[in-house]
Amino acid sequence: MRRIGVVTSGADCPGLNAAIRAVARKSFDLGYEVIGVRNGWYGLIHDDVFVMQKSHVSGILYLGGSILGSGKDDPFSSETDFASFQVNFKKYQLTSIVVIGGFTSLRIASRLNDAGYATVGIPATIDNDVTGTEQTIGFDTAANFVCESLDRLHSTASSHHRVMVVEVMGGGAGWIALLGGLGGGADYVVTPEYRPKFDDILHHIENRKSSGKTFSIIVITDTATVDGLPLGECPKTGVGAYLASEIEKRSGIDTRFTVLGHLQRGGTPTFFDRTLATRYGYEAVELLKRGDVGKMVALKGGLIVPADMDQATRERRKPEAKLFEYARLFY
Image (cartoon, rainbow, N blue to C red; front, side):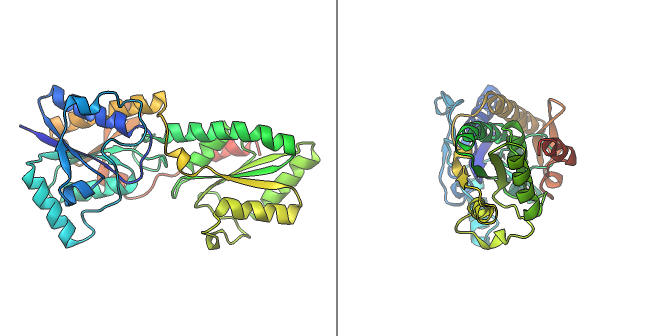
């Protein structure tokens, strides 16, 4: 009898439950037992797991968050934690683990596989920064939320002739800002990959004003930097607040900021994220069935294919240059 552990690790995102549901239902269909691991790796370090039944995954497709809970514990953080992980892995007679998470979580999964604990990964993060796949679970929902937020901010910015600075998440990559901004009609996007000069941002805002456009929407990733501004020195206020204050100070234009924050991680997953997560969950169990471990499922050309987890977690995936060309067309 195969016993599969399922873990949601790291920051949460919409679509995790859809993936859990698919992993469990496909496993049940094959006659496997499924062990739910609570609160990320914490569950296997501190012996907090349970045997999952069909009832546990009923009615969860559309729910945000994770019914298992998540966390940022790492079994490799200490010898004691790794020893506890080993004890509990053996205690519950696990044959493999499906790890649902982002870049760091999948890197841990790859290390566990190298250590002899069979793992398969499912890429899930709003940051969309996992190499080897075209899209991660949660990104579509987050980008849609940013797009909708910009739609709303356009009307109030236009009414009051303001500059609106919108700070979004993204980790070390600018996917959310870039594509959320592109879809939401942002007038300027600042990401970790594209470091503009502050004077260029001011010049763009002033050009819009002189051409009769009395408002501007600026989207910035929370880890971005701008030449001429010490954004890294303002952790308490955040980059969005600091950029907004400097724009108003130097241009004289009324400027406001909005931090979308954890709203980007919550809520009901989109159709795309639900179906992507379902496909990923199904194919992850198929990998285990074939004994093809140390891999993660990935989206390539519309198909779900295996990708090497070690290769996928060596470097974070960045937006390609062409996407910045698309965005700059509207600056």
